[in-house]
Structure formats: structure tokens, C-alpha cells
Image 1: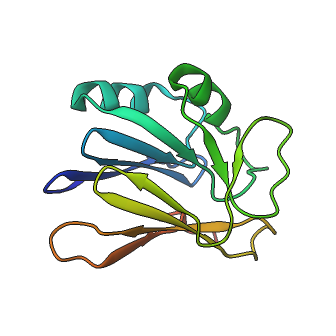
Image 2: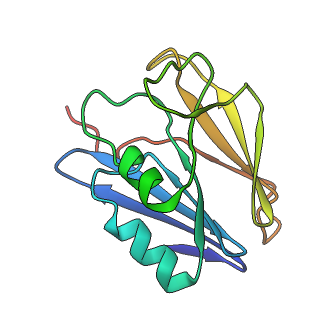
Length: 146
């Protein structure tokens, strides 16, 4: 886990699925990107930090694994955010390209990046501490299958 002053970024990786999720926290507010089905690690991390999960971001619809977004949203009250052109069958925020979401002292910007799927979205972290101007978070497996 990286901790930059008042910010945490932790990748939670499941090797058997080659799937990574991210826990991002700033000033007591947390966001989860592409949550795994098992939501306890996010709830535990937020509780230990005294943080509230404010947003659940999905980079795209996942046909290769079951996401924990619906369960996590029900447990925390945090809205689920998808990128432009997404048409979920449940309540969600459909972000516009370049829409901003405040999370503590940082801003998360939704960038529509269709390709993998038509609603694919990259989330850009702006205003990160330690003189980092920006950090783009795009979910890719650490080990790509051959």
C-alpha cells in the first residue's frame, strides 16, 4: 500500500482471476475501483482508517468475474459510478466524460476511453500530495496471460 501524506492507494489483487481492485482514501473519504465480489477487505480497511466509502467506480462491465459493487453499495450507501454509454439495470451515476468527483483533497476525473468495452473509463486522480500532479488509475492485471 502506498501512503502519500493524507492519501492511501492500495491494490487488492486476486491472482486466480488476474483482477485488481483499488482502495483510494483521502481525508477520511474512500473510493473503491472495480471491487471484487468479496467486500470485507474494503469495509475492514475503511473501518481501520476511520474512513467512509463515498464512491464505487467501475471501469467497465465485467463479464469475466462477479463484481462486489452492488453489495458494497448496499452496505455503505455509496453510489456506483460507470462511464459514459453504460446502461446498467440498477441505480448508478453515469459519469460524463471529464466529470469530476471530490474525494477528500483529491479529485477523480472520469475519462471515457472506449476500447475494451464501449463504456470503458479511466479514472484520473488530480491534486495528489507530494508534488504529484496526477496519477491515472487504469485496471490491468499484473501478470498478463499468454
